[in-house]
Length: 274
Image 1 (cartoon, rainbow, N blue to C red):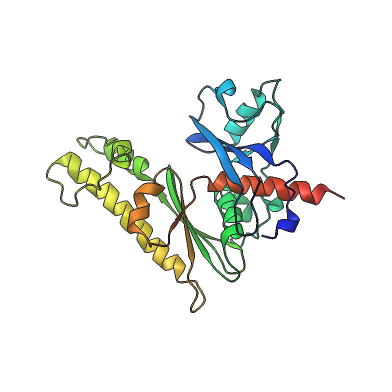
Image 2 (cartoon, one colour):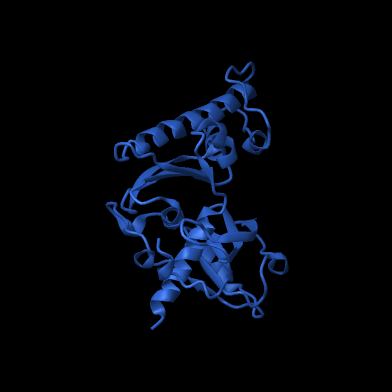
């Protein structure tokens, strides 16, 4: 993405991504974001969907411009409705047609906005003619492809770690629920050979997910031109777990969607200028 098409005169603003499980907030700063670089996320916070919003504790000044989008329309509406009077009201950005990325799929209007935000950010990082594979591991895990022309081409969606763990417990009579948060916080990967039910579930969930993501990354990377290596980006809460098992060139970008929202907001502001 060319720097000439984005307006960075704000320098700093609040980006809000309302997802299905969490709402993420980030203070985005454009200082030093040249070509092939993302605007910096200076501070971030997250709340559970439907939870109380700690307005006074959120990053950013009260006068900081705010932009909100996401895959959860109800939560976007709630946040805008409850927005405090002493803060600058947020601008809602949910029209996919205005995003600075071509959407080359069967139904462009149905693509998850978070996936498109990742793609917008990825286009700022990739080299000319390079494809990007984006792994976003949260409630669901998505493995998406931005092609050598910068088009979002779709990808694959599979259940995330916690979703699989809850499903095993809910749809069986005796299997316990496994809290994957403890696995994500551990320094060591679980054993492949589980010697009790809990260990067997943990290992199955962990290594099964790692294997599925590795297979999808390999298949989507096959869309590269000969001699060209895809850029692999990892984001989402479970990205640190996946990172050791993927390519050594895999790049961690924990705030990719928020940074993509910053680029969308800046590009639209620029297009409105005379």
